[in-house]
Every structure is written in structure tokens, then in C-alpha cells.
Amino acid sequence: MISTRFTKHSLVTEAHKTIRCYQAQPKISVDATMGNGHDTDFLACHSQTVYAFDIQKTALISTEQRLQKTKRLNKVHLILASHENMQLYLPETAKVDVFMFNLGYLPHSDEAIITKTKSTLAALNSAINYLSATGIISIMTYPGHEGGKTEMDAVINWLQSHSDQYVITHIHSMQETEDSPHLFTLLKI
Ligand SMILES: C[S@@+](CC[C@H](N)C(=O)[O-])C[C@H]1O[C@@H](n2cnc3c(N)ncnc32)[C@H](O)[C@@H]1O
Image (tube, rainbow, N blue to C red; front, side, top):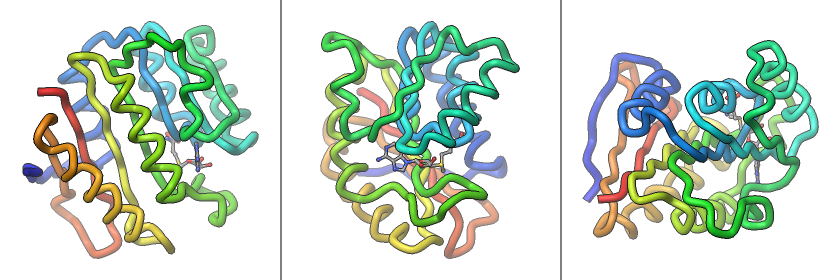
């Protein structure tokens, strides 16, 4: 079963708030889609170590600049690779407290470079294997762009198939429209 709740906050704020609530001081966190580094910086602020992935060099440059300004670069491994290959970069025995997936494309950039259902599901399957006993995965999906609804439906199916072993919540914005993003969290029981 997937529980549902509504928030009046932006879903990005809600994702950060929920993560902080479950994991005040994560040891290892993973930003599976670093983009412009807002989530990477949030994770770096609270975690001992962060592994951040993106397939675009511009995302790495933008995130590196952000982390230089906030003086958190020393906590972060910036990795130019698809999240579906995370096992090549994470220590084999790593227990990850937080995974953030903020799917879709890099804002103000090439909208054709976008997360894809197949690699997203492969990355989620890897993430679950690394998740610590008190870990959390947050997933933001964007049904409003091309392919986004298909990806969101696949994520929902994937979550449903894990709902026996994990606590799964679907968080809606109170101002939701057809194209609004949706946030999901998965916690170990
Ligand atoms: C919505 S943005 C992420 C926003 C980001 N978390 C932030 O705080 O700025 C989505 C990002 O996912 C990246 N992406 C797309 N496919 C990917 C993949 N297979 N592995 C890792 N990142 C990917 C895109 O390049 C884009 O930068």
C-alpha cells in the first residue's frame, strides 16, 4: 500500500524537510541527479560524505561552483556517470542513509537530456541494495514533460512492488495540477 499526504510547501522543501526528519545526520548520502547542485549542497550540509551523479559536465561544473561557495566541496564526490552505474563508484559495503532522485532534465538546459525509465529503475534497484537500516529514498517525478508521465507510472509500479517491505508515501502539492511534480518517499520498516 502507498500512503498519501498533501503539503502546502514546495515539493523540494518537503523533500528536504522529510529527509531531515528521518535522517538528521546521515553518514553517506547519494544525489542520483545532481543538476545544479541544490540537493547536493543540502545533503552535504548534513551528511559526512555525499556521492553525486550526473551525465552532464555542465551539471558537475555548476555543482562544483555552488559547493566552492558554500565550502562543502570537500565532502562531495562529483561523479560524471549515469546513476544506473552507481555500484562502480560507491564502496562495495557502503550503507547509504539518503538517496535523492530528482528526475527530469536540467533546468535552463537541453531538455532532451533527461532521465529515462529504464536507467531510473535500474538505479532504484541498486539504491535499495545500498540502503541502510534507517535509510530513506526520495524521488521527485515530473509528469508534465515528454516521457515524464510514463516514467512516473513506472516509478509508482516499482514502489508498489516494494510496498510489503517498505513504508511508501506519495506526497502531493496542495496546488497540484495535471503537470505538477509528485514526490515519493520510501523508508525501511
Ligand atoms: C531535475 S535535474 C536535478 C536537479 C538537482 N537535483 C538540483 O538540485 O539542482 C535532473 C538531472 O538529472 C540528470 N540526469 C539525467 N539522466 C541521468 C542519469 N542517467 N544519471 C544521472 N543523472 C541523470 C540530468 O542531466 C539533470 O541534470
